[in-house]
Image (tube, rainbow, N blue to C red):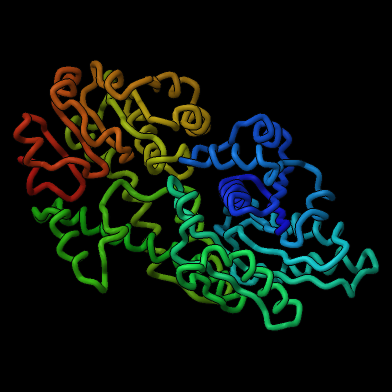
Length: 456
């Protein structure tokens, strides 16, 4: 099938590359000439395991092309996937300017039936606005009778595992209407996703608004589980319980399960913070308050300060002249995404208290330098030392603070850690290690919700 993907960001590039991998002829459009040049020269603008190989393979086969030519992109695909950014507006709502601009371009250039697929994460009712924008352009051209359909096909990709998530989905959600154009769109979407349903049916068909709502509901539930466990972890520190034992105890209940019950330093990234805020905003438009989600967001904001609090509790309010080693900058492993990353809150607090930091992340160093330049003054940024290896970051530091659970951090040389640090102290924001083991090694260990075993 001939498919157009509008936007070559995280969702668009993964979607386009994976659909090309299945044998489709995919045209990827972006207005950013630098990004298109990078892709055409063999690079990719994001870090995602396995993606570079898929892009290279399908570019070489001719099934995947990249361009800034809007007219050509509309002419290419009967299926037009809109996968552009929907950043949060000042009031927390999703900014739809790029989605609607893409819709207008389709209406301006289409010359026959098109299926417009909302792949971006968008609020309930966006499909109606997309359809209205297309109709307006068709009306301006005197082509009011030209048929099209707008469907919702939200993505459920985890950063760091997006290629595998796309190629082996646990569910595919598609929303369409019951008009003749909508039924035709269903047939085309069914054909597109047929390769995923050979073993069993993975598509959940529903109306458009339910599909739009499903994406926000899923992310809001996952964010709720994280904030719930983080609140319990903070209480566990106070009452002397071990949150890891609690996690196993409640996760064994099949009604609860083990996923997303890990205590930590708070969630970040492009999805959970933005989607929780957008869903809250949607509720307010209908004169409702989502009190649970307000609490989820408030807990997460506080949780990003937990590592800074633990440093202060151990080393005092005034950190002037001290240096701390920080392992992990990206909001999660296997990505270079620094959006809403807990590391940004930690570094800002340490530096504002007078400390310097020596930091290492396996892939996010370049992106971290860019975003930290936005968070910190030039003088403050000068106190951030980007180290090539995690062990180099330890030299002369008061303690090690772990923010991101990269696999490379799971089995370090603890004797070398002790030798390089001024004090054998690890403040672990992801509970990577077992407290009894750390105690046995002579390391003062501070986890999240594990005070019962830290030797306090």
